[in-house]
Image 1 (tube, one colour):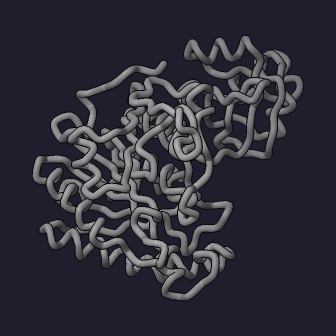
Image 2 (cartoon, one colour):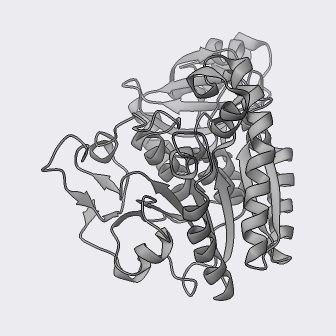
Length: 380
């Protein structure tokens, strides 16, 4: 459902949003020559300082390391010509990026902290909890964490690929109330506003359904970043599922947060009721080890809060071990839940569609009566 507007949340005021994550993309932070847009960034830092003075806690997710490093190393294709170039550019650019943030925040009397994470740091439950604890402590100390993906060690298989989804996962780990994605467009439109003059801005999105997802454009207009509207909607799924609002606003103006607060355009995805911490982490994961396809009866049972029984399974895909995360899907490809499998993939395939009394005969034992227990499952 699409609502007309949501004035009370516009600007994410400190009175309503205690903890805020702000994501800045490469195209906003770095100019085409590979230099930091310091004057613009100073206006954003002033926005952050004003919000902190008003009692809001702020976390920054900042892109830009690869773009900055590529300039310093004179690498072709913006440092993205190869994995090795991207890693070298990130290692070189990150130190310059962190220095810039620390210096500008210090001008406003704010202490900065740097956190570099990989996809696996937030997909692994123990490391996720460690990151969450670190963010919590920094918040209580009045520090502004500046977070980026650790691209110097990340590979194609173990990386977020865009900082939109990273910002949403950091928001989840930090138990943030809201996430703001600064973009080259001022929200979600019914079509790409760069090519369709009739495209209309959607101010408030209550639920992300197929119609909303179809409006996304996966391209990155600048050629500098790695995200597009598709990644922003995926970020919104993660954030709203964790109980946080998510806004997309324009970063192409000075003091973008103040501009939005004072009537600037933007789109807000409204938070869904927050899941329990472990289930929220499961739902927000970006990687899974396998897929379990279920029939219509099992889909209805899961929607009523039941565990997944082998009898409702149509097929099993992928190779996974007991305890690995799997997606639970319908035959037409919709993911309806995510959870921890009680069986490895080989046994799961053997017992698919079977009743409990038949499983003991097939396996020679019946260690567990369910394939995915409801306590270790999150609907998505």
